[in-house]
Length: 289
Image (cartoon, rainbow, N blue to C red; front, side):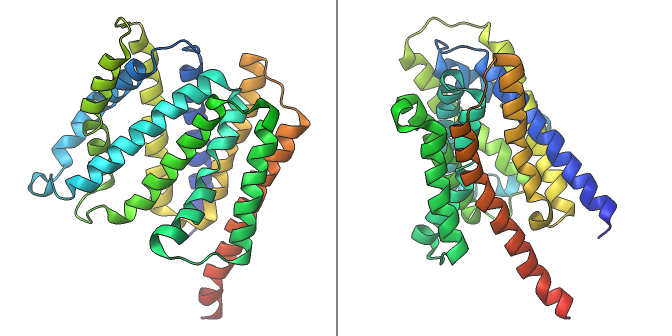
């Protein structure tokens, strides 16, 4: 594998995280009084429309295999979007994103409970440090229900990541992505109706922008990880936090303080170290050979 391929994949992830940040900015611009469920339904609806061309490449003979897992992931994913919208419209952009990065830490912890995996000493340190980082980034005096929605989004993302192992092997990534949007639509519509707010179709522009940017992010991730081992490039994902700090400062006049910096370091530092150690461990057998 050439260095040019690795550098290209890293560049794709940097661009992808920038696009994901644009999605976050679009969401944040909706304001704290946005009709959350209505916005989520419109975003899912736009995503389905945008993904419809992919349906031609889906094997219809296995379309409904594993529907139970797809339904579960779709609704957990919808819950993650709901929590994300609430967090982004109420918390500083960088703070919300810092908490979102707890998802990889939760994946480690949940893998122990769900799949019986064992935590190494470094993994345990990563978990403890990550949660300490959340406390510093949010600060107990600023804890509110909106802060917990950021944690809720991270938790939902972690659960969905673990459920990937349960997805049918016959389904392609495009198939999984398409069903994740389609299966969540009915519940999202029901919640939008239950919300009881008058329909505001001006939200459609924001929902479309957010959907386009996040789908483009997924595309960059699919391309990057298809050609390069994840452990060689996954550190580039953390550029998303840099984008969050920059755009939070420039666009929303949000200036991170030392508490945020310390908390972010505790969250991302051990994750990066863990990734480097895993990379060396996986490369050792090939080097020995």
